[in-house]
Every structure is written in C-alpha cells, then in structure tokens.
Length: 409
Image (tube, rainbow, N blue to C red; front, side, top):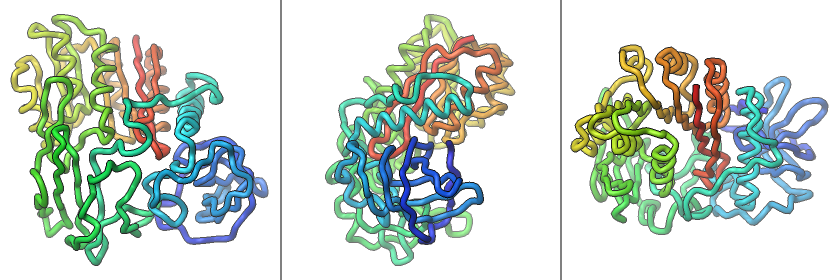
C-alpha cells in the first residue's frame, strides 16, 4: 500500500493500540482499526504499539508509534540521537537493525513493482536491498542541506513539518562535517549547503532567502565548487548543485552502468537526466571516438560542470534542456539510454518517446519505489522486458532506496 501523508505539521490526536503488519511505501507499516487502514510510522512489522493519530483521510489514517508494547526482535536502540517521534525526520528507520531495514526496503520495492508495475520481481519475504560500498549504516553522507529558523538557527526538519530541530548530530553525517555550524546565527530563512568533497575538504555555502528576483549566495568556508572524483576523472560541482549524497554511490552506479550498457566502439548512448555527466564519461570510454554520447539535463550548473569535466571527450555532447524536448528534437537512434530521473520518475511521455525512438536497451534508475514501479509498468506496456533489477540501500537509516532496472526490447 502507498500512503499519502499530510504535508502539514501533524496535530496530536487520540492514541490507539495497534498490531502492525507489512511495511508500506514511505516508511510506515500497515495496521487496521475499526475496518480502517492506519499507516504507522516508527513501528516494525509484527509489533504491537501504542500509536498517536496525526492525520485522518477518510478511509485511512496516519499515526506515530509513541510506545512499543511488544517489540520486534529487529528493533534496536536508535542509531540516530536526534531522530524519532517528536525529533528530526532525518533517520526514520534508525530503530531497525540495518539488515532488517534492508529487508523491509526490498519488500516495499517488490510490493510496489507488483501493484503498480504489474511485475513480479521476487516474493516480498525474500526481497532485500543491497548494501552500497563499505560505509555501513552511519556516517555515509557527504552532502547536507540545512534550513534556518526565523532567528537564524540551523537545523533538520521534523517529519513533514516546517519546524526545525536545532541539533546537528544526525547519524548519517560523518564526524566533523557539521562541526561549528550549530552555534552560529545565519540569515533567517537561508539554507546551508555543506559538502565534504573527495579531496577531504569541507565547503559551506549559504543561500537565500530570495530577495526579489535574486537569491543571495555566500561562500562561508572552502569554495563554491567541490571536487568530486569517479575513477581517474575529476568534476568541480557547485556545492548547491546535485551530486550523489552517499560517498560510494557515484562510483558504484558508474561501474554498474559501464558493465550493463554493453557498449562497444562506434555505438551511440544517451545519458538522460545526466547531471554532471558521470554516466556519460564511462559510456564515452566504451564507444570511443567513433561513437557518440549525448547527456541531457535541465540544470545549467550541471551542464557547466559536465562540459568542463568532459572537455577532452570530443564525441560527448552536453545538452541543457528538458529530456522531453531533447528527445522530441533528436533524429538519431541510441543503442543504449541511461535514465536517472527525479523522484517523480520519467513518466509516460518520456518513456513513449524512448520507445518510439527504438532504443533497444535501457538502464533506468529510480530513487522512489512507487515512481520506479510505475515507470517499469510503462516500459513493459511498450514491449520492454526486464532483464535485471537491483535495489541498493543508498540511504541507510531511512526508508529511501535506489532501484536500478535493465530493460531490453
């Protein structure tokens, strides 16, 4: 089941005693009360909990487990000191033993693929997400964005709330990354972008709030651009721009694409929603100077970073445009397309354009299970078959995952 939680700060309601069952997409587990589904956060499958209602939506409701009456054997003391009920929303599975959390994530993906994509990946009780790299469950994050309160204090948001928790000792963050930032006063309403780059340097940039048409940006520490490396290639990426948050993600995904793309000399590859062109780089090596790679992204900052990093690869074209417009305008045919769309997925129109272009091999990456499953269903309706699906635990301590599918036609 896929809940639709409220976007406003929850208002405390009555408490219920519930026994929760299967995990749901979004970090909750499913319980039933008086014939109505209740999505319960901060609970594990099989637990009996005392839960506080926070939102009601007619046929279903949302609740938070405030007391664990019968705990699961997979429950552990929270690995994040600031997360949980009435805490920050950063690590919403910090109370689950990490291997159990990976099983929960795998089960959710399997459920979403079956329900929304019409595809049986594996039985839910056999599914699991894979560990990514060797970072472990804590200290894996290298990029953090903090908001600031009306009095200029930096913090993490409470779950689905504008309210901030002023403590910065989130377990996702390596020691020292946020050191010295909690005791300072910042521009009220500004955002702090903090990056630990691949040379071990910290960069802190303050942006906003918007003043008319202008968003003021100040470099507080380090530089505006951070050094990121994959293999022997280096990128200089703005601290405010996108780069994978997990320290092993860019390298791991790049190696996966290089292996599964099955490219050879002279072929053509499309890198869609390509960001700074990490996948374009490995595909360019495979197709060589007689081949062609096109990388597309709407971000001007990402495009500048891609052009600089890939300047020696004359057979790579960097296009700053929407994927939909870029595909509509193209007249060539790709042998492989790699897509890494935003959380909402690629969607019907983009997948229709790929199918109409006759792309025979697609590697599709998704960071939201429901959107990923819907996209898989769209591919299948256009004659693609699933060759492989992998699920990576790229966001330990949270319910988020990274899903990768290889599709052929």
